[in-house]
Amino acid sequence: MAILGLNKDILKRITKELGLQTAIDKLPLDVASTIQPVLISNPERVCDIVKDRTGSGAIYTTPTNADFYLTGLSISSTSKDLAAIDFDSIYGAIASGTVVTLLGIQISSDALTTSSESLSKTINPPILMKRGVIISADINSSAGHSTLTGYTVED
Image (cartoon, rainbow, N blue to C red):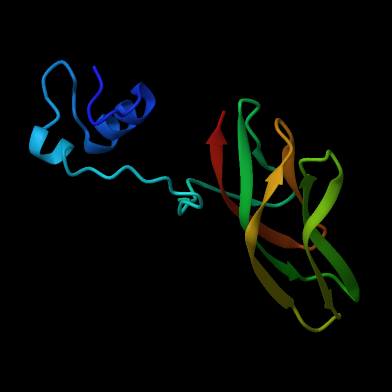
């Protein structure tokens, strides 16, 4: 059954977008005659992945069955060490497989003060990460917290 000469894939998408159940609902003919299918070439993506971690270790493991696009990172650190210079970072493998530091922060303190620093980065355009890899935080300061945001696109 073709409505307005639409192919099956477009018809399925229209019924899905309208929330119609083909066993119960029928596509209204008056609406069907005025539907203008369009292709959105650059859709707004909703960041459905938000992960955070306190201290060092894995923040997020990218899926093996979908592409993960990294859209934002933040890191905050506090140093209470005596005359210390600490470097805290978030790292992971990009699509080519190269492991890179995605965000880093240096923090220094002396014997009398506690120092705190924070840094956030919005990534536009998003970075495609390698499938099935761990995005990790390496926290060397006394206390550190990291967050990442992104979205997945299934095959």
